[in-house]
Length: 299
Image 1 (cartoon, one colour):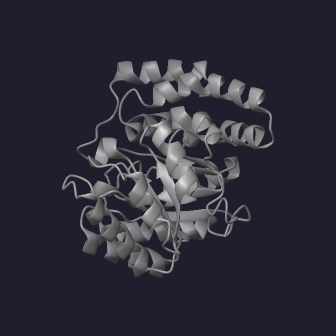
Image 2 (cartoon, helix red, strand yellow):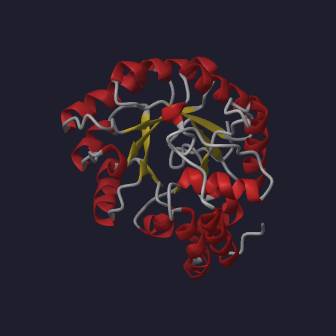
Image 3 (spheres, rainbow, N blue to C red):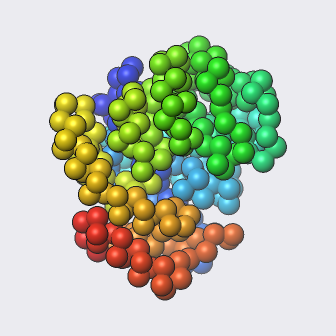
């Protein structure tokens, strides 16, 4: 386990939701995944989310998911938290993935809100509880109603926080008021899942980030959170403002598309995307270069 784990920061403070590198013919690139994971941890990540949205989990098989977790653990598992995304919109399937991730050696689980079928809050509660019951690993919930169609209401988060293994929430709800109440009432370790709101969420009680832009600016994210937690809000604000072009540029379209393009520009493992995701158009790549350069990213 990474040495930065505490009850208040169970997965550390800075995590990147890692892309899944593929070979030119679309196969899983395990060597590339190990090289990318090593690069990201060397850059300052406390942990990596594997098989999340940015990892194109909807288009990887269960076997590929296990192979990827195993490869990343071999590369960085003694230096960083390796957290496996296991959430689906099928509770039984999510339980199977959770048990497989535990068997493979993952340090924790990320469980996204069931998507598309839009369960009620009681359904969300039972789903998350069942998956958390299935493995002896700490759990980070993932609340992203823009993708799932259903938010995890504050009352549901408070109920879920009573589970001994549900210790954190990745918040991509985009609502600072609701986040404030949920942090205060649930006691969960709160991680920003929306890079543009990294600093604002710290101000209402978040402890860190699960980032997409961490692929290209991890040192800056670490400097931001360290400045804030040490009381230097002015410095944290300056870093936040410097990163605004990066935040904007990396989310002009789907984050996995821009991230793989940015990694390719830096000569790092990424590879193609699996359908239905597509590569950036030439003009989009040029705009990405402008955005990254404006934020101080060297290409």
